[in-house]
Length: 196
Image 1 (cartoon, rainbow, N blue to C red):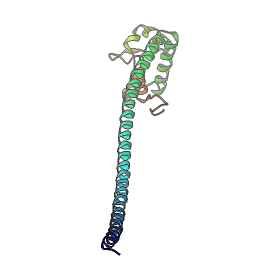
Image 2: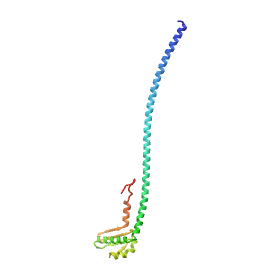
Image 3: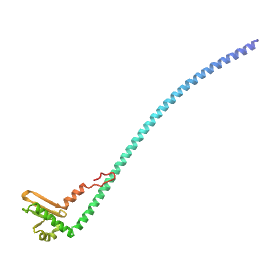
C-alpha cells in the first residue's frame, strides 16, 4: 500500500470513527432533549390542568355570585310587586267594604253585633259605640235593639265597640282592627314567596 492509500484509509477510518462518535453524541443529546421535552410537557400539562381547575372554580364562584345576586334582585322585585298588589287588593277590599256599609245587610250585621255584645255583658252596665260614619243609622239601631248607643270619637271604619266598665272589657267588632290583622297576616301563595 502506498502512503497515499494509507493516508486515505486512515482518513476514512478516522472519519468513520468521528461520525460514529458524533452520531453517538447527537443520539445522546437527542435522548437528553427528548427527556427534557417530556418533563417540560408533563409539567406544562399539570400546570394547564391546575389552571383549568382554578378557572373552573373561579367561573363557578362567579356564576354562583351572579345567581345569588339575580335571585336576591328577583326577590326584591317580587317583594315590591307583592307589596303593591297587597295595597291595591286591600284598597279594593276597603272600597267593597264601604259599598257594603251602605246596604241593609250591614245594618243587620250591626244589630247582630249589638245583640252579641249585650248578651256578653249579661245586660249589665255597658256603653256601645257606633262608628262616626254610622251616625245616620243610630236611631234605627236603637229602635231595633232597644239599647242606647253612643257615637265614637274615634273612626274604627265600621262595626261596633262596646265597653263593659265593671269587668274592664272591650268588646271589639270594629272593622279597622280586623282589616289591620288581615293585612298583617296576608301573604301571596306560590312562586318564591311563602304560602299561607
